[in-house]
Image 1 (cartoon, rainbow, N blue to C red):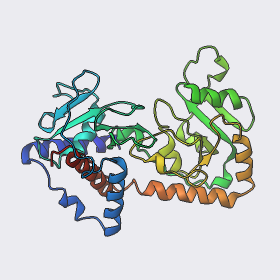
Image 2 (tube, one colour):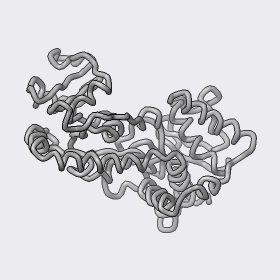
Image 3 (tube, rainbow, N blue to C red):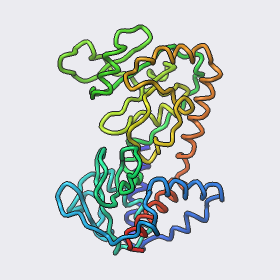
Image 4 (tube, rainbow, N blue to C red):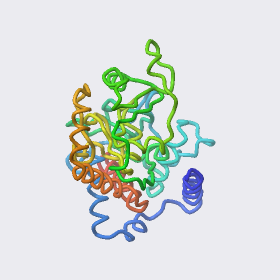
Length: 321
């Protein structure tokens, strides 16, 4: 999968450098009316800027923490003079290969949890009203968008919740503090955590975690990275309502419909798990809804079309198209 990812990105890079910007209609024309409608809806969600109401002159970043570049200067990491986030550059070029090279973009790479001052391409953003300047595009996709093939029915899995993370921020530490050691939970940190050595446990493979009915998906620096593959499985994601989102549009997920929602302090986690154990038809419905949501992100043509339309809204809103 990793080899295919890099092969696709290299092909897009060199073919565009040689032949120039691609025609986005080559992608749009392959979509059904339903797929194109979904792509447009996602673009509107990921770029809240209204190209008419919010149209403005393009504004540059002028500090080292944030970036501005012209598309003609967007190069592969081993040629780049600017940002060195290789996977971010690969994914950004994959979207922007369909636009004229004289356009400009603002970007902030990494785990973004604050609202930019000006319209900016980001991987992640807070879920809150009025966050128009955070324009989500698919970045670091190789890490975040992974799926699993899970053939074990939910009812045949262990009735417990598992969590494995490399480190514990406050959200994860609260979960551990509440339920670590309870027989209905198998929770732990695979790295060292100062002051709580009892939280350090052996790592688990994804396949081992899929033996549990519930998998905790607790946000880290921004989103919970494991949420995507968990929702593609026959286990159920257990988590509080998300505070951040990426291209997966976590802000549109419905609690107790796509995942099992628990309170921010996790106090009702066991109660909600036990309720689902007694209502397996409800559990099956949550899994089916999660699979339906995931299926919307597994078509490469629709993904690319949505990304192109999102970028197009950005360029129109910044007065460049």
